Length: 259
Image (cartoon, rainbow, N blue to C red; front, side, top):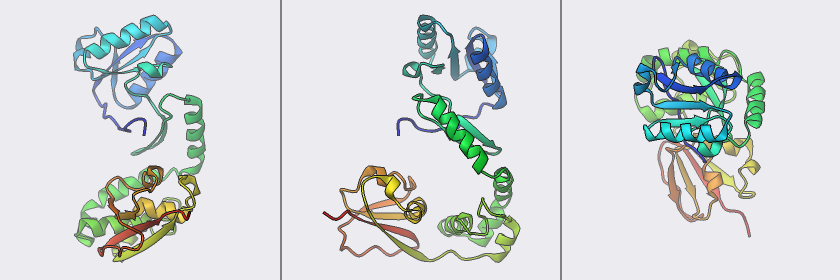
């Protein structure tokens, strides 16, 4: 990854914005949409700011402003100058409280916008309602599945394609809670690598990586493949003929390419 994706809470927080015109206005709308307070760098409340946007057309003035703000300890975004940016703003798909951000790290805002538009037509508008219903059901989920690992697996299976909470289906949280379907105690999925390109993974393989609790793989497994797994999945470097460890949840075994 070229950057660490983060979502910053800005409700009631000052954000410094330098510049005039359409680009600055667009950044102002973005700040205010997130609940932030856009202001000049010399405003009384600006001392509480932690991030800043610079929307100045003159390259020298933009660089000087960025250096000045960074010297104050702020993280700075300079419009159309990714080499001066501490952070970039992604294209956003908003299904409040679900937010999906698409970023190219400043390489091409047009590509990010095109991907956002594609996602807008694909993702259901009810995603936000599903997220809110799951948030309200936290206590009930703990009662239904006291063990945190079992609870996560039960939710993962319910949200999977065809599951009771499939976001692209007709999810209903209450019937799912009433059903209290126990997740599979142990699932072993074997991935036979076709290449080191993650695009060559089957849909089933990619889904298994995303759900895996542990991944068994040879040392030479490409990092591009392993990056498709959850960050908190346990990684075990074992030879192909070693017995997989026992344990609840999903185990993915990666078999190296032949030859």
